[in-house]
Length: 260
Image (cartoon, rainbow, N blue to C red; front, side, top):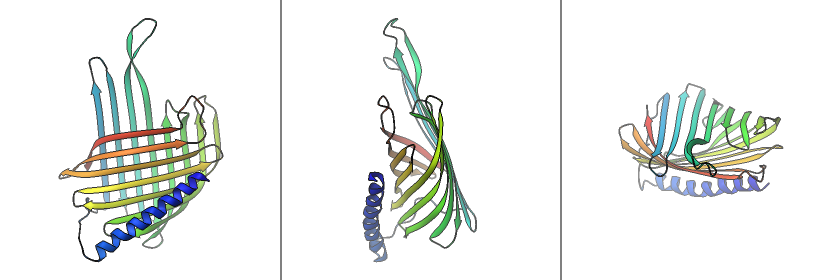
C-alpha cells in the first residue's frame, strides 16, 4: 500500500510541474528544439568504465543498448543493460591479494505498444533481470496492459502504464517461485534546451513474492553531433529480502551515449 501511495504522489507532483511548463510553452515565452531528431529507428549505445591500479585495483563496466522502432500502429522497444565490477580482496589468513567479481548483473527487456489513439495504447512487456550476487538470481515478468500519454507537449511528455501479468523468480538458493504480478510505471521526459534533456522513470512491480520499486533520474547533455554525456541516479527497493542482504540499493553513473 505504501508503494502505491508513492506512485500516486509521484504522478501528482509531475502533473503539476508539467502542466505549468506546458503552459509556459503555449504562451510563447520560449521555444526549444528536441534533443534528438525523430526517426523510425532510434538506437542508443551507452558505455561507462572505471579502472584503478596501485594500492587498489578494480574494474567497473556499465553498458546499455536501447533500440526503439516505430511503425504505423506499433512501437517496439528493446533494452539490454549490464553491470560488471571486480575488486581487490586480501585474504586475512594468507595475506594474499586476489581479484574477485563483486557485482554482475544483466537486464533484458522487450516492450511492444499497439496504438489505439494518439494518446492510448495496448502494451505487452517482457522483462528479465539476472543478478549473480542479489537476493533474487533472476526475475522474469510477462505482462499485458494499457499505456496512456497523460502529457504530450512539445517540451514535456508523461507516459503512464499499468499492466497485470505473471512473474517468475529464482532465489539465490536455486528455488523458484511464480505468482501473479501487477506492474505500473511512469516515464517523464523534459526537453530542457536544445542540448539537454531530463528523464525520470518510476516502476513498481508487486506480487505475493516481492514488491520492487525502481526510480531512475538522468540528465543527458549533447556534446557533439550524436555524442552525449549522461549522468544518472538509480534507486531500487525490495520489500522481501534476507537480513544479510540490503533491501535498498543505489547506483550513480556517468556514461557516454552515442545516438545512431
